[in-house]
Length: 75
Image 1 (cartoon, one colour):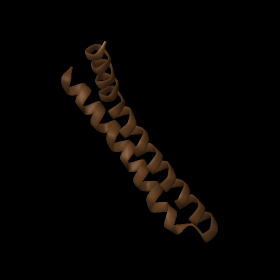
Image 2: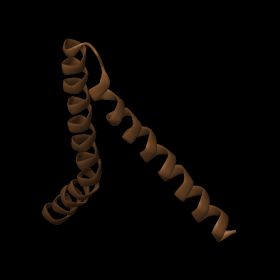
Image 3: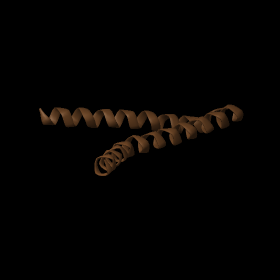
């Protein structure tokens, strides 16, 4: 059972990574430079938004624990 779960997860991560690498490999071969620049700006914006959202989602539980601790101590 454990081997099936690990192999399925590994295959899923590999496929997702290969799709991202294929997209990055195809972008330089695009013929229209204007579209290329807009697409590159869009992808950078999506990357920044994803990393920011991920960081906030990881930090929010820590902040909520600190706030609830302060409320219980001071009331």
